[in-house]
View 1: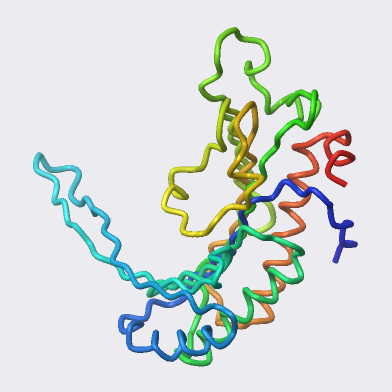
View 2 (view 1 turned 60 degrees about the horizontal axis):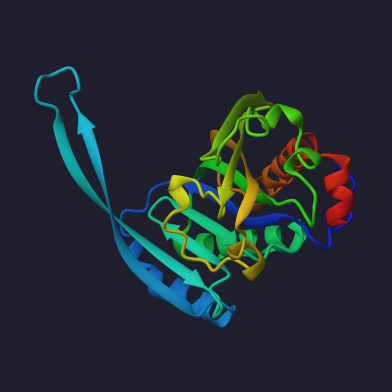
Length: 263
């Protein structure tokens, strides 16, 4: 395993999540009360249950596609400040945080939640393991975004006239057994969140909520889709590999000057 990089004093990461998909549990709701009690005692007392709806479209080759609304339950277990916690679905657990400190702490909490679910539910296999980081790249004082970002991510944002709406780049690569999706969105104003994060329940840190100017959001996601027997050690090892891959992508995305500013 690679040497851990020194922790930054002003790290740009504002949201991090790990997701592990496992065999579907049709009666997951029967186990939620036990899990909620354990997590409440473990520092996550804020509990919510909610219905989610999605449309499934089938038989697209016919003139009248079959549109089926489907309902899914989702349970959230957050700390009192609503800055980190777990999302439980019938086939997945997510640990997410807006107060990321170190990967060791993040990984420990992810594995802690999975171990509780496994202890209560007895999971059989894992289908997908993913890790995702979002970083806010905001120039300090009189700096410009060009001083912080790899030129390949800037597009025409630094050269066209007028108020920028957005500039977007995305690169998808296959690394080892997984896929790395690296996106950069440049805007003028507040942070531009991905559409799937619009309903984010967690509270962002004040310094990120107050952003109002030229900025870039780096959204880096690495995931492996492969069915394996449920094994906490193997899940931990895969998340460590994912962290190394995402760290390398971040280093390519930002400049030495930026890292010096955040040190």
